[in-house]
Image (cartoon, rainbow, N blue to C red; front, side):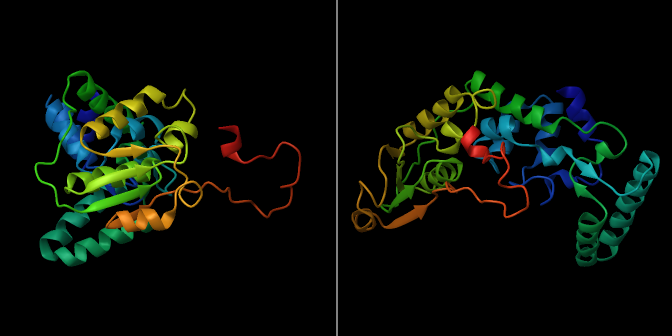
Length: 272
């Protein structure tokens, strides 16, 4: 971990935390630096700033932060040009910050796609593994504990759906001091995390561990509650100040293309 995080410290332009690198905008260089310095408690704190459940993403994320595409054929040329771009941005930043931002956006969109700049000339930094290591070490060392809000707002929120979006919404709302109840139509909490991702990718004990923590923090969970069927939606709306719909995409999107009708073509979720 120290060697990999040290490689990150050599980067001058962290595309890994742009919109093409990390969908949740993780502060990757920051927690890599903390790992390099051996400050593991600070690393998990920094990781949690942008990611409610790093133990999930550290296991199942396809890691676009590690994939960097540049249209120049020579690795040496890629490296040289990236250094030139970084120097160019530094000069522009010194002259005009607004213009620097504009040029940076242009470079990101038209020159570099993805994340880790090290991948242009060598293997990328193993960002996903570092994230995995940070959160697993935090659980092991007892650094992840219930954060019970000190004050409550008196407001109540119903979250419909307990997949990753529902759990993240519930976590954020609870930390704001609202009283949150999560409704799940299945018999266990987790949604896609529990029923859509194979055990080889995400162990269900890992999901349940986080759910148990959320319960300790004050979030209530109601299973076998199919809103609109065995639970009246109007009753839910009347009993809560707000409702958050995080039901996911349970209906697959078909592909109207030639060959779709051929044998052996299936929706992915059916297999999972």
